[in-house]
Image (tube, rainbow, N blue to C red; front, side, top):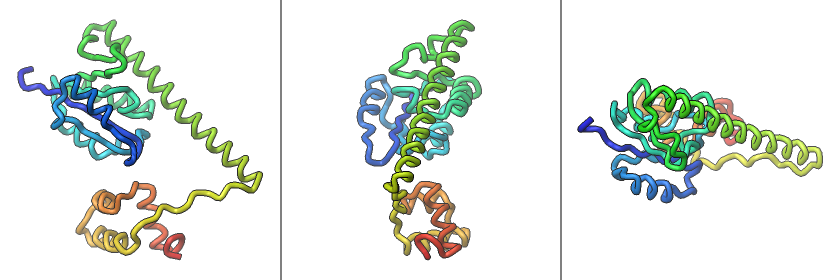
Length: 207
């Protein structure tokens, strides 16, 4: 397709991590930096601003490049759905740079498609099981620390309460969306909605 483009997607799990290595690899693969979408948040779900923006840009015949499968996401079931949406519903290709077998440009026949889909399912399954194992080890560590009286729990995330109250007032007046407020406050959804609950009930930070 004459007007098809190469699109890159990069993701790091937190704002203090550097995505430069991924961007370099994507550019070397032929992706124009104008078409590289970057998220700095967890891969546990796909409600990410840049990822959702990328999905709206992708067209049939385009090719999406990622450096490794876990940059796309870590949720086994949802990653499979997203892969199928991009490759089958939209009709674009996906190239995983560190896993040549996951290059849908080279797997158009039935056997190739089957092998690529199988590898995808195995890799995303392993990735999710690893994430579950890490969580389990964390829970076990916390349980042991509690038994020994050493667990203090997480400290509440510091927020600008005055700005938060202004943003929340704008949301409730219909002048701003929750997503816009979270972006302005630089807050993750779970922290944002927990803060709303604390504000409404005058508990936690507003006790």
